[in-house]
Image 1 (spheres, one colour):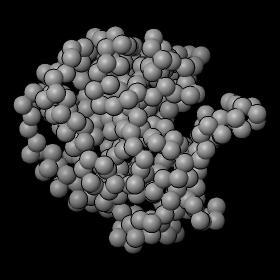
Image 2 (cartoon, helix red, strand yellow):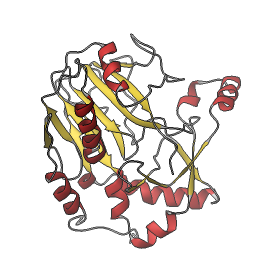
Image 3 (cartoon, rainbow, N blue to C red):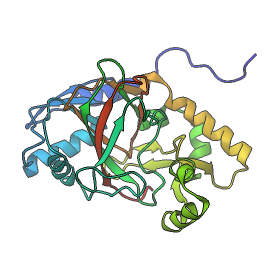
Length: 296
């Protein structure tokens, strides 16, 4: 008989999150909550037009609170997408993925020959010493069925852990590394050269959001290699217990894409998963990533 704990019934702490989100209101747009803990569809904003300081400030508040914002019917260019994203910080140029129309834009073009492999929970570029604040992703072409993206609320995940497990992880550091993902396609010499530029990053397992001050879990299955100071077996066991909590549907929102839909999410407090269930149909997306701060 399995000794792994099984949870029955509601994740009661979500009700407090929902109450907080239900109490939000904005002067410059309408926000409609998409799940009990995260995700809001934003209406009344044209991402192709300049943002006033007041509108940009409200979008920052919405991003921090809802963690992922959805916009429909945004027929914008790559440069307009980049201009929108620059309102929130400096944009990164990804060292492993090719750029699109502008160097900061990554084009994900999937079809029968190039399959979607982003179907694991992750926070973008957590392997950087200074990882991402957020990402802006726009759909150019999506399948009629499938190809959804899911996000999970890492603040709610952390709050849902037992008190004993929170105490166990609060002081631990995790090592994040690009090698087990982007390093796979590199030669040993190329990998060593990139390692000089991007050494393994040390981040707290539990980070504090720099704006909200709330704490969240900050480890993910594809970029977190191990827990510093633990033997590999103990590290894998601890990370495995944490990853099981990321899978809990009560902490998630799922978005069905349409052409010209845009998602803007907070990489500091969420992880995302791109469902790879549409092969051999085409799915074409373009993403920008905003440079953030060193996790503490």
